[in-house]
Length: 222
Ligand SMILES: [Zn+2]
Image (tube, rainbow, N blue to C red; front, side, top):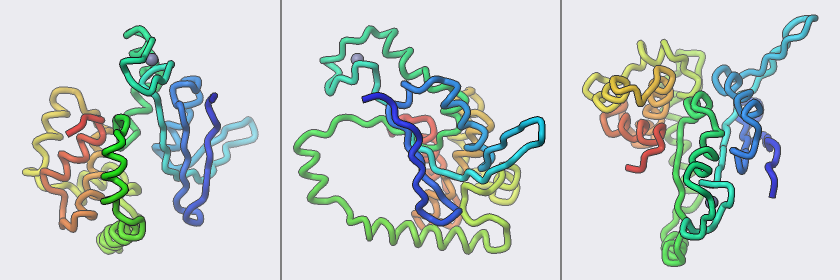
């Protein structure tokens, strides 16, 4: 099946939209990279000779990608040359990946894992309650600010007013030092770390929360 266009579904009136792009590397690079500015700024700006119009565009973007063009169910059946596999995923540009907070490599689920999941998976209602508790915690912390969730806090404020304690930062500091984490990436992992802390009921992000956010941003499995 070929690529499908963005599917924008309004879940919460005006505040939070959701878009998913399946088979993301099949899109032309320019199409995906056009999402960078709205991802960063929460609005789409269109400039014409008559002027510039801005449209609110805060959304959650989900990109999905097969590891290679042949999309074999098992790697052993993949017919793609190594350089073809490498080139395929690199069609999603570094600057766009920089703005993707959570990256996960999924492996095929075995029948045993599917059975295990069905037996022990949490009900959506329980997960929703946990998310609501975390959101309430965030709202309380941000009560005297213009923001309602961690993703809305601007970078400078995040580093000044909501800076995690220095002892929580060794992994992020090391990643900045060796170049595997960009300055923009640092802001993004701080926001995710606050969300992890809110979900765990921590007052501030600790070392594990920062480490978890960094692992999600880099896409490395812990
Ligand atoms: Zn393949």
